Amino acid sequence: MNAEVQSSVRRVVTLTPSATELVAAVGAADLIVGVDRFSTHPASVRDLPKVGDFLHPSFEAIVALAPDLVVADEVQAEVARGLNAAGIRTLALSMHTIADVRAGLTAVGRALDREAAAHAAQAEIERALASARSRAQTRPPRVLGVVDRELGGLGNLVAAGPGSYLDELLGVVGAENALADYRVRYPRLSAEQILRAQPEIILDLAPAAAPESGRDDWNRLPELPAVQHGRVYVLQDGIYLAPGPRIGQAIERLSAIVHGSEPGPGTRIE
Image 1 (tube, rainbow, N blue to C red):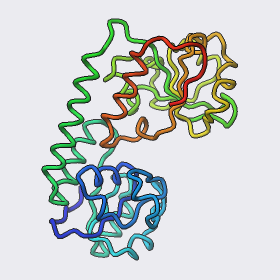
Image 2 (image 1 turned 60 degrees about the vertical axis):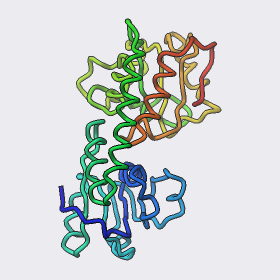
Image 3 (image 1 turned 90 degrees about the vertical axis):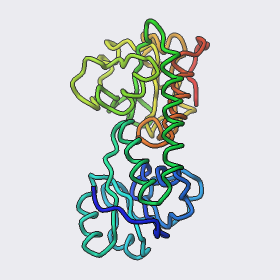
Image 4 (image 1 turned 90 degrees about the horizontal axis):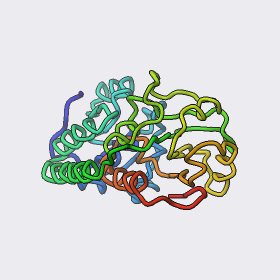
């Protein structure tokens, strides 16, 4: 992790949605002057200058905003080294798990002199985790989490396997990943493999998952228990895929889906 700054920070640039939400979670959203192009939460950042994306942050765009602090992902090491060399301090965070979110809140809170707010956000996460675990069922339902697929169909489908962030969330809310036996974090699945997995609940998080066509897409596999019982959910929010301080919100919604009353046939849009 790179050197942290002191409480004199007045201008912050964030290079990932997770970084943006961490800064906001400690009450410093008003300090953010630039974000990556995928950051949309909180709403106040949506019209801020964009400095590239996760894989291609723009060094020039970042420097032009004259930040006191840049919050990045540790994967963005090359741009972080360049910023440090230019005299712009960076905070490079690992962001893959719930534990990483806890650590990220601590680091950001310390860097921005918002440690009390960081502790409060962490406490809220712990309350959500405890509540979700208390609702766990004796026999966890089998859940398939889809993270990508082709527009208007089930081709090129990629799902969340063991070791993924969504896999961790499913464990917290008392669900079984339908791909628990796989050895790949994000496997690409054929229709035959989906049928063998026999998910009882499907979480469709793919960017191409259009609410109006979701039912027709999944009705192509009527043998699936999730389709038969109307337990396919199109969830159009990145909180289920990217670790961030809104863990509590993600867990609450997933827990309601996993442990909710049996819905009627059809695809649910959340």
